[in-house]
Structure formats: C-alpha cells, structure tokens
Image (cartoon, rainbow, N blue to C red; front, side, top):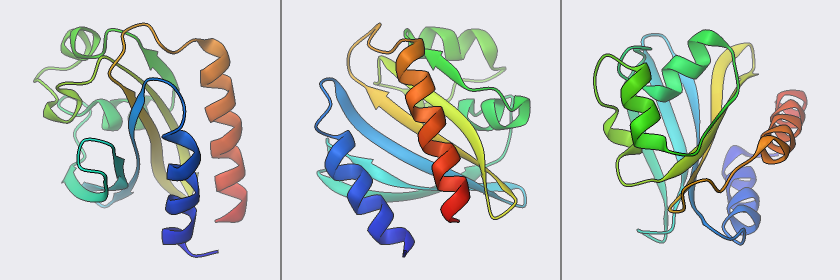
Length: 138
C-alpha cells in the first residue's frame, strides 16, 4: 500500500473523532524528522521537516525516550519537559505521541486536539495498537 493512500485513509477516520483537528507521522531521517499529516485548519495534507532535537521537539523527545505519552495540557507540559518551546504544538490543547518504527527507522504518530483533557489511557492504547499495525505493513 502506498504511503499517500495510508495517510488519506487515516485522515478520513481520525478527523471524524470529536476534538481531533490534526495528525501527523514523523520519521527520523538522520538529524531531521520528516512529518506528513493532515490538519483541519488548512483542510489539507501537510509536509514539514525539523531538526531531531529531544530538547526542542516533543516528537523527538518521545522518540528518543521510546515512550508513548498523552499530553492533556499540551503547551504547558511541553514547556515543562523541553529546554525550548516547541512551536509545532502551539495552538493545540492536547495530544497523543506514540513512537514506533517504520522500516527500522524511528517514527512517531501524533494526534492533536483543540480540547484540553480529551485523551485518556484507552485512546493511547488504541493508537499504540494502530502503530504496531503500521510497523507490520511497512
């Protein structure tokens, strides 16, 4: 299955969930993370890359520590964990960050919401199961 097709299928279902406004999958490429995803604010698929720096990027932090996380006060919790503000989380209220592997490369699946306290451990487990599936097909 082509990666673009996977993103399209994911976006159709994820964006129907109450409070979910964006998602992205980031893959580490050397000292960079390359993101692809979808955002409701632009009503479009997105691509972005940033430096892999666990002190400045919440996605890199979760990948580096290999630990899935729920952040229900996203900006506040991000600022407490990182040495510098992560501009990628600005404007979102909560998120789920699940690190996994795609073709033996570090990756992270991120879901963003504009609602605080939206996600719980059940949502985290569901996304973790989903990323395990993504690991198997890629």
